[in-house]
Length: 186
Image (cartoon, rainbow, N blue to C red):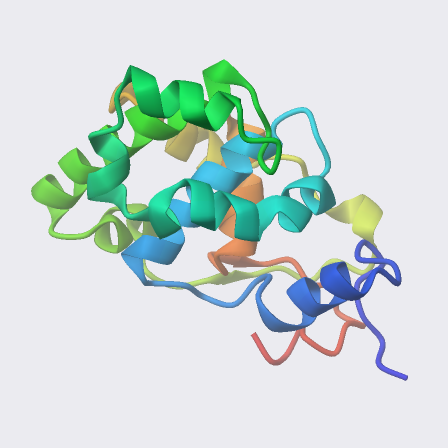
């Protein structure tokens, strides 16, 4: 039996996400965009709720094609609001469109979103050494800086707590507890 972080419990989907995705350094702009949108959709909800709807999101949001989403208009917003497979919140749907537009601007300015976002950790994952879930902070000074800069650039649903969850998920920080089998792997 593998020792892992406690948060995924025994839900097979959550365990698979923990074991294969969470904390793995990610540099693909499409994946970075997808996770940014899904982290924003999670606001006020649990991650497992969003994770269970991820495939529906991929279908509804053109597999997170940032250029397509940036061009969404009112009729697409109404279509998304009628889609029971995603979280039907107008503010979150509109923020996905706004974030796509801001994401494209960042790509134009920096060459890639990857280059921009990883600058907050100097291009190298920060390896923490937490022994229990209770030690993990909800946000850090780095996630606060990231949030402030993203907001300045027009992004929505990117508060410091969402940014820290994003950093954890994208492997910018290794917050697997030290007893977790993934700690040394990522």
